[in-house]
Image 1 (cartoon, rainbow, N blue to C red):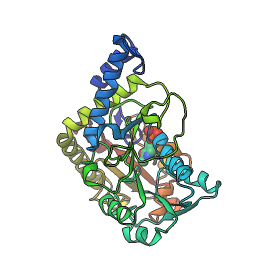
Image 2 (cartoon, rainbow, N blue to C red; image 1 turned 60 degrees about the horizontal axis):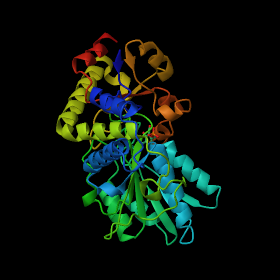
Image 3 (cartoon, rainbow, N blue to C red; image 1 turned 135 degrees about the vertical axis):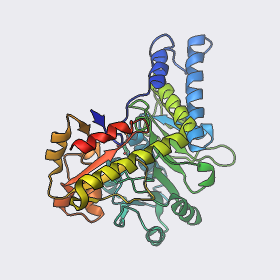
Length: 372
Ligand code: PLP
């Protein structure tokens, strides 16, 4: 079976698994412990993982806060900023095509008296930076705009958006879950990005662990916000709770491998995507249409509309040989809001399928499309 749902989740790499098993078995210590070796070893594992994640996004190490995943990271930022800065203002700006881990948090905040502006997107799911400029107000406390879309792979102009937010002195959060390891993220050159969310399981790390980047000032102090969890004060007080050492160590290993193989992985994803497009075009010609742009997108995500075919029926039929999806794994029972926002009608949404590759997918395996 050819697994082409890597935007939903990925398989753990063997090195990641080995690393995790170590911290699930003999090295079971609590990093917050003192004086004895088991605790020290666990502390070293967390420190090493932090170094690898920081290297992948080019941040300072103490700016990386480990969380349970991107959903939690998004919640910490949006609720945490809303609470901490509500005296300054109650206006938040986001986009109509965010993941539900942003949209639903914003909807929740609306019930608490916050006002949310949802920016429109173009035909490929990108916001227009000048719309953002026009939407920022005196009382805007946060802009939250995803880097790459999980359903169609489109990329927002994060450099331009971060410049606007810096000029207007407003915090900028980006959900980078789908671009981690697939795009060169260099936070040293993106001063306007205050917060960034990411997750391990989209890049061959374990589920249930992610990170939140929080920019620090010249004295090393993290941008303040109200924590979601209160307790032991771990992770600079932003994320209390005993460290999930095996998950964090696995995330670190996945980040190290992603960084080391970055060029090779991008090349592999581009080759895989090119082959899929070639086979689909040969096989289906004008009976298909692409919902993804051909450029300026995350490599390895292709969203295709099979005209006249119902995606659920198609995916079920394909399932013994190809695993793909009709969109986001988190809201697969509802017709995709992303596809509707880029202009598809409900019938067209129901004809659309997302294929998403891993850099470890074998090019030969893609030949299975010849047999459809
Ligand atoms: N944000 C985006 C863009 C995603 O694609 C996902 C996962 O599908 C999430 C957030 C949620 O990530 P996690 O599963 O780590 O909570």
